[in-house]
Amino acid sequence: GGGRREGADVLLRLPRPRLVFPNLIDRYVIRSFGFVFLLVAASGLSIYVIADLSEIIEDVIKNQVPRTVLFPYYRFLSLQIFYDIAPVLVLVTTLITFSLLSRSNEVTALKALGVSLFRLAVPAVAAAGAVFLLSAYLQTEVLPASNARVARLKDVIEARETPRTFRRADRQWLFGQGRYVYNYLRYDPRSESLQRLQVFEFDEQHGLVGRLFAQEATYDEASGRWLFDDGWARRFERSEVTDYTHFSAPRLVDYPETPEYFASEIKAPEQMDYDDLRDYIAELETSGQAVPELRVQLHNKIAYPVISLVMALVAFPFAFRLGRQGALYGIGLSVVLGIVFIGIYAFFSTLGETAALPPLVAVWSPNLLFSLLAVYLFLGVRT
Image (cartoon, rainbow, N blue to C red; front, side, top):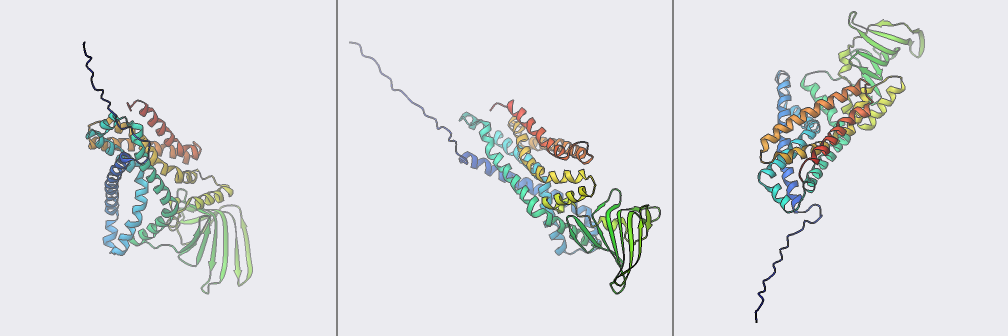
């Protein structure tokens, strides 16, 4: 009888990717991302330091600034530089990392094994999240103190006298060049005006002999004097008041300090933490002043670190479409994307500072717009 030929069945089993984080692929992507990030960060910091040094080198040579001043200056300044360029660093790193993976066909191999691009992007998002957390920590715990130190060291480099002050976020005390002590709520460098100014005058024996208050004091360039508005003046002899004058019309008063002296003592928003700046704004608004530009700075303290995550999301669609075009193409593309984002961010910030938009909307709109753009572009990528 006829026999039936039986063939052997072959069963091929391919490994199924496990939904574990971080797995071997995740660690590989994170390691590649971290290596590229360190190189890009070192390059970015070097460029900024060289550019800054070229601006102050004349003062360094003229004033014979020692290394004990110059090195700490750049050590503290590098923290602010890193914070400022962190979103661009994430953007460049993401584009370079995945363009290198594509160039070596590793992205193609992973897709053939069933790993989607969404899953492949997870470790890079986690790395960008680490940069976001680091930026948030710097903003909250480090930069207010380090920026104040940078300002003092910059005064030493430029051989500029640093006014001796005691100050809180909501009050400014300034020892004048003569026998005067100034207390004011805020100095506005654009209008060269001081709000709620008090001037205490002392004699040679350090006794109080005069006190003058004004709701606003504006510097008059023509006369070289201060124009006090809505205030009063008292004169003292020992502990007794010898004269009191109230004035509601503007009054010219001669003091040795000029606007430049007060401008050098502005406590900038970057030298305050979130709580200090919030309390300072509340004090100003309670006194009847609208300060949308400070509101923008306040919301920036939260919104700016988030940009690192947004930049990673924006980079993914472009990174996966680069294919084998190489890292240099990715760097060029990242520069273009960075310039576009910075332009839009500056535009919306200006709208917030001029009260054309609510500060909260102005600060967060660029992040929202670019996040939506990233999602839209990612939908067109074959994952």
